[in-house]
Image (cartoon, rainbow, N blue to C red):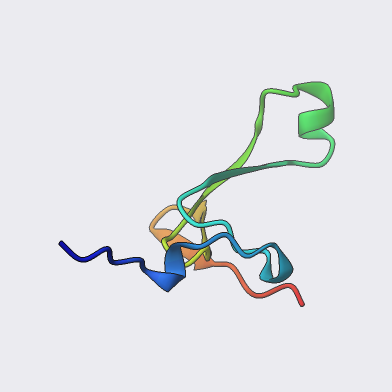
Length: 65
């Protein structure tokens, strides 16, 4: 049996890519008053963040470097 490893599933801190993660970011002022309120996104197998930005719209994260 062959051992297959997908290169896109590796964590890459240099490029800020963390596959299969759930990310959470605070919302200024609102999260300061209510720390349990924030904004969520989901990372794909390549580590790109899919952000639920509004009704019927999902934005795609950009490379920060």
